[in-house]
Length: 196
Image (cartoon, rainbow, N blue to C red):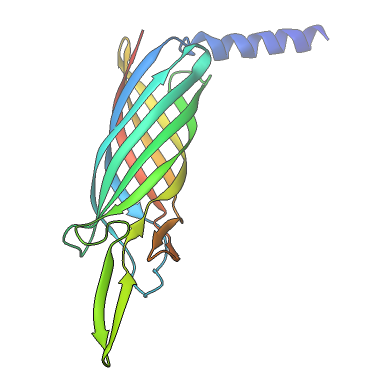
């Protein structure tokens, strides 16, 4: 029994020796890459990302818990002005590991397909074989969820640089009031955290 207690004490001491203290931390990051992982849409077209911009913000409270917000825009390839606009709120936790800052988190929010001719409620009228038709061609925003992880490396006291990976599930953007589209994606990012 004495050996077990000494072993647990030694392992805990080694782990906590280099574990950062859980103080308040502010972080800011930007997306550097995006990949749309969904398959082809109902019309046989595969959507691809053509650049992304935006920001990731986070405030870590004591004991490793944190709150965050993501806002980013991904341009769709082979389109003139189609963009996926995403806003997300996150809850995350910093794992007590030595040397690095390892974070895991979950988020939920909303995603919108933005373009000049596809706002929600946009109608298109046309005539075919002498009959007038009106079709809903607008996109309705959908709910979105994500899980993510981030690993940070200290560069100078109180600052670290971190890399992040986000896996986004988005299957609820609605086209024409009926068809649901899949814009699930992954996003990589880079950022800085200030710990105090």
